[in-house]
Amino acid sequence: MNRESLLIATLVELADNLVDDYDVIDVLTVLTHRCVDAVDVDAAGVMLASPTGELQFVASSSESMTILELFQIQTNEGPCVDCFHDGLAITNHALSESDGRWPLFTPRALALGFRAVHSLPMRLRGRTIGALNLFRTHQGTLSEDDVIVAQGLADVATIAILQHRSTLDASALNFQLNNALNSRVIIEQAKGMICQSTSCDMDEAFNRLRAHARNHNEGLTTLATRVVATSIAPNDLDLWVMTIPE
Amino acid sequence: MNVHRLLDIYAIMERLERESAEGFALCAVAAEFTALDGAGIALMSESDALTSLCTSNFAAGALMDLELTLGEGPMVDASRGDAFEDTDLRETTSSEWTVYRSEAVALGARAIFAYPVRLGAIRFGALSLFRTRPGPLNAQQSSDAYLMASVIGRAILAEQAEGSLVGLAGELNGESMLEFWVHQAAGMLAVQGSMSVKDALVFLRAHAIGVGSQLSVLADRVVTGATRFDSTTREWIDETAVGHYKR
Image 1: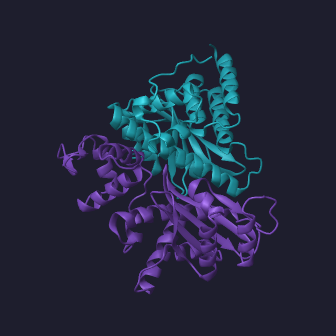
Image 2 (image 1 turned 120 degrees about the horizontal axis):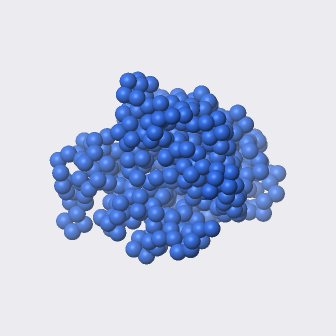
């Protein structure tokens, strides 16, 4: 697919997801995967501001522990923190050993093979609520078009977090932000249980959760809550998605 | 940026701890921090029953009793679900809790703001704040209320793990609970020890204190298999001296 078709397909897919009772983590996960497809990057993640003002990751194109750690470091420092505080995009930041800007983040990102990083603010009416983080394994710059597409996807992510709230006052926004952040914690608790019960690793645990949620048309967070409440046994979760995505 | 607001909470805790021989109540911290007319905190038991942990003044106490007696209201709903804000109890069009609303107004409340105290799927209870005049919270108060609820969650966890709130501010200041592997570790430990995720998190935190480790460091060891809990002997086992990863 060329980029135009890919973008149209992505927007249709997201619009299709943003109906009634969608699961915000599921939609954001889809969005990070589409970022990787539609923008010239190798990994993508969404980070949101927690009540303490620190960033917490909520969705990623990869659930591998090493990638998640790269987001975790950015609770304290990194491109997302700077982007979030300044409300300004960071694009085409080449990572190098001699780069002293993020002393914890940069060596870890380099060790994972990443060479460039980008971070786009998620903004709503003057308030920055988080950042979309993009990683690239090769040097070179994102084109102007890439940046426009990425910022567009960051804006869609912001809309997804708001869910169906018509009024956008501070308390409605705090409500949605906190629910999204808490959903991610529920998913991590469930992943731990699945991992221990079925002897799989954490990204497999997430994939099973997501596959089962998709197959049974259940929200990811609802399903994860049922796992934690032991109303469904980890071993009973589907291993893969039964239906072929359109 | 709310990090300075978090430090404000710790400063209130430390001041109240110095001022009173009996220690401080979390609801007093909540009422002062959010600058509202009163606060109450309810705890949820394993069987989902609510009990009062504390209330900041007489009216807050009466509102708490009212809600626990009726078994309905914003705090009851928040403890089981999501945050709930009723900005004018007298003018509301909702048909829910009509008895609660009229009684709450009689007790002097005009606006009620209730927040779940939770960590993922773990439900500790709820924070209820009230004001004697109607109207929404401003942006700062709204952020503050969510921040306060998250601090209360961590405080209740600490209290359940250690049985005391002494020196809480200093302790909370060093840990964030934002590390995702802490929640993964609680899930793993729940399966290892055949317990609820809530008990597992309390247990994990208690063990971290017992061995003089940071919660995030112990959680890392659990996630990487360096430390596990043996359900037969009910003992912690260190498989390796050093964790697989150093964080």
